[in-house]
Image (cartoon, rainbow, N blue to C red; front, side):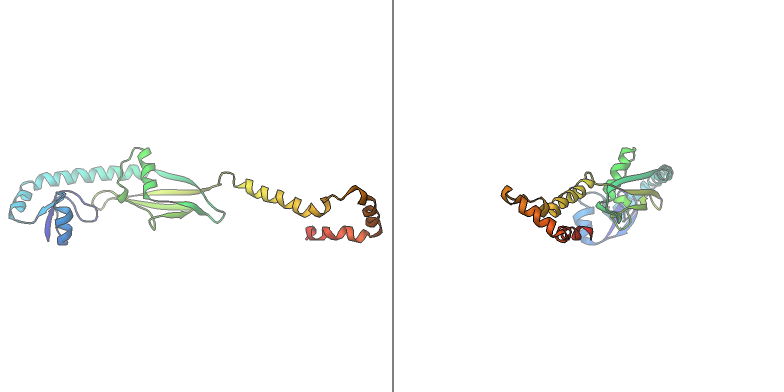
Length: 204
């Protein structure tokens, strides 16, 4: 079915464009939402009547996009995300994260206009994010993802080391009844080699 677009639609066309689309897409989406009108004599006549106004709006959008492109490409976005030693993130970064960061800087960019490599970033590094503006105009923003240490990540490692030592010293630290203390001491003097044998696993 042929339709005439009432407004710009990403991936489809601009206001005033005549497009051939699937019947279901037109009847169930474009026409009910008044995003387009049927391609017929009545609406073609209306299109010609407002053609000059449409072209004037398009020219204004092109100028605005060129200005926005210049400002966006001066930006550099940094994210600090918990990551492993191999640079793999404990999480990911997508176009929503980038959009939120741009909003903080005063830009209102639709999420679907923000294109991230492979849709999601899962590793540290430097990336190029493409932002589609208007017509063929687009901006490229530098995105830097840095790894951040997980909060308390060094704590568990130390804890494991501290727990390991008592486990090795447990045989030596085990107490015996006072009545057996002197025979044990005498036995240790008579057999010095057996005293050093438990230490050999620790030295390895």
